[in-house]
Length: 304
Image (tube, rainbow, N blue to C red):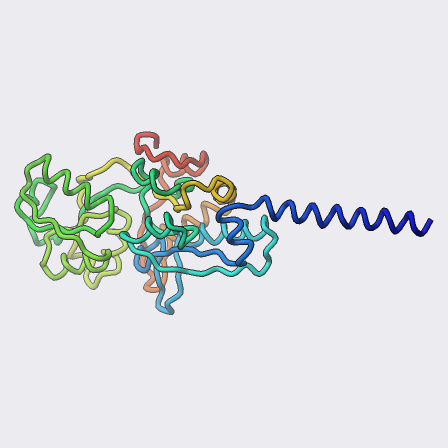
């Protein structure tokens, strides 16, 4: 009887061990790397308020960061890694896609526009914000619309879709612009502040944050004219890694459709955000409500 019981016990133990090994062996790509290293690497921006930026204590915070940390926690549960380490890696407009594509970072949380061209290089999670391309300028400049920029110097950020859009508009409308590329958003805005550029072309929500945080917000205006339809922002992931992408997408969709999401959105777009207590006053639009209720990573602006 004892031998029979022992035999059954050993068989049960072997089944558990073999089962656990099989589960571990099933992991591939990014999930396997995370499991083996007990680390997930998250790319972030340094000054894309309110999405991903450093506060006054050099802590990485923001709307996109909160979403990605939720995803990380869900992955931690799924992989049973209670002590999963999160490595934060700064990225720029120019480096964010290459660093995802080459596997240096696993998730990118910032203000990255999802479009069909980029989907050839990386994968996107479901949309978490809709923006449009506009430009900021000094009210004293006499600029009123896109046509009034004719012959002037404008700036956008290197590696951004906005730089491409203003270049296309320049050619299509024969504006005769001198177009400069800044290394980041603060540098580009500073060029407008100091008169080195007449306008900074960028996503409207990012411009709103820069104006709100400037020394004299009343000196600036953001154009009514747009250079794009509403464009979707999403977090980036490795392109050909279906298991990881499925897990991250499911986690994000769960958050978007939860009761937590309206409060999370309001925290960053309706209320004072750190470190300066800026209020962006950007309530959730009907299109944004629809996008969150029906999570999608569709890159086509017309689908929203």
